[in-house]
Length: 188
Image 1 (cartoon, rainbow, N blue to C red):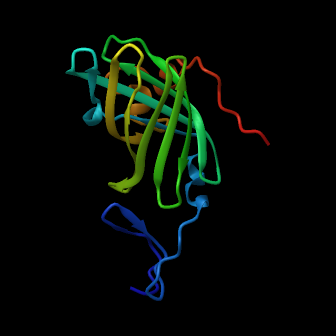
Image 2 (spheres, helix red, strand yellow; image 1 turned 45 degrees about the vertical axis):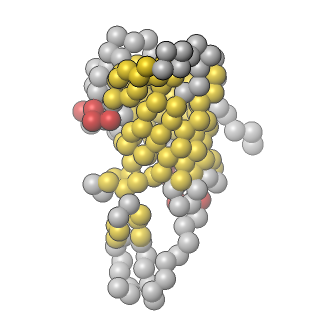
Image 3 (cartoon, rainbow, N blue to C red; image 1 turned 90 degrees about the horizontal axis):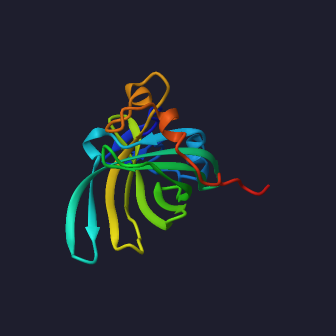
């Protein structure tokens, strides 16, 4: 396998630049391309779960979430997030600050007026593109919590998803106009 010039994918882990039987250690620079990317929940991953801690009941709900990652530096990224629960729900927004290890493990911190939610995930290559395999469960003083996992995928201008997001039927830019929080800005 020595001297392969193209990347290989083994399971869910990207392996590239194999030479002399060892793999180079990934660095934080591996994820610098995340700057100014847009991520959404594809149709297959829209189902989420509402949990009412007062009654102990679970109910299905659809959840479209869009991230705009504005920047990245040395394993940290930040941006804006808009979520809509259900077809007729009202969009809500959160400031997003996250970390991604060189190996692709993700920790998300989502801050809104309703509180803070943390999520975990992994950068996973699927069908030749990177996905964010994320999981989260919201905290809530009202007793209603939302649990969701999804393989979030990128959306680009010109793609069907860019012009019409699953479930909400509007473009990525239109959906993100619902963002009303402060924009995380790094200190120099």
